[in-house]
Amino acid sequence: MNTLVLLLCLMAPQDGPFSDKDAEDALRKLKADFDGASIEKRVAAVQEALKIGHEKVIRAMSDIFAKEPNPVRVAAAKALSDVDHPSSADVLVKAMAANQNRPEVMPEILKALGDLGYQSACPSLNEYVKKVGDPDVRAFLPEVLATLGDLGCLSSVEPLVDLLRKMEGGRRNAWVNEAGLRNGADRALQAILGQNFNRSLDWDNYIRQNEAFLKAGLTRTYWLRKTQQRTDAAPLDKAPADSVLVCARLHPPQAQAQEGGENNRAARRRRRDR
Image (cartoon, rainbow, N blue to C red):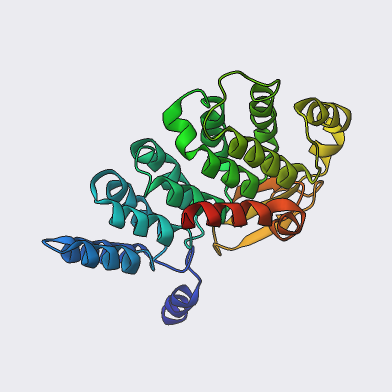
């Protein structure tokens, strides 16, 4: 009987595909590979470590974003975009403050957040939209707007409409990238709401007239701790047990791509290629 119980325990699935031992082994190897290594080898070490998508390995990337040269930080952001775990978004959000004056790194962090799709990033991104008067923020704000469009969160609508309002009325001292900001805010709102208006007043009227409908029509996506897979829930469905909310949105990503989100990604690719 004891042998049978032991076998059953060994056969039982663990929480997620990676164990604590997997994470500890990956972190030991990462440290060993970093000691005295070139930037190229450190990039490879980060990429290898994040093949183990365990929370401990993910959170170790915080030090990378704070201390390593730009190419290593970029590698970490790109690799995290493929690690579907709530901690990936957490680490990237926290990394923004230390990298917002690094034009090689910040766009990659923002792109990774958009690719992951966790709307937990939106409060911090919305704050950047509100700081449009800061020239340092304006430098990467187009990428912020593209990411908000990818994330599709209703909480971003108000700051986006307010941004449009600030740029209307033929301002005397227009910002250098004001046209791009206006277009980016329009595209983000189109991706979130599936509508196309030209003025902040039109967006305000639409939201006011449809507020109850918009909130009632959100499809939610959850990340399941046990399997580390995603599942969707209809507006009236209960949240699945032991899960983390990824997003609540009017349009799923595939519909978003058809209705305006693809414009966000194409615009971002053009900016990155310049």
